[in-house]
Length: 151
Image (cartoon, rainbow, N blue to C red):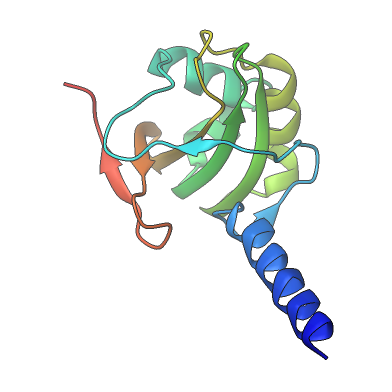
């Protein structure tokens, strides 16, 4: 009986841990989710904002870019070599997720500088009036997200 209860406890804990690694509701299963760190109160995985937006929006039509409205949040896992992998997304924009080609653009085209640890970067793109604003988010408690900036 103790063995059964212990097995159930471990299974529930494992399931909760795996689901907790995905920050946003739309999940992608292309990434190897072993151990990684979230950015908390400072940006660890540095990348030029222009490079980030151009890579993510590569292949978008000019109409898509000009008519995009709303928020697009995504979680990118970055390995020590700087390779990206899209983990999860929240799409609150006027665009269809499939047409954005996020998975292809992030996994195949987005390269970060080398890192000392595997990092989960949370990026928020806010679209309004044909412009895009990039924000980086962090978490210290795995429940609340806050905007982070480097000084």
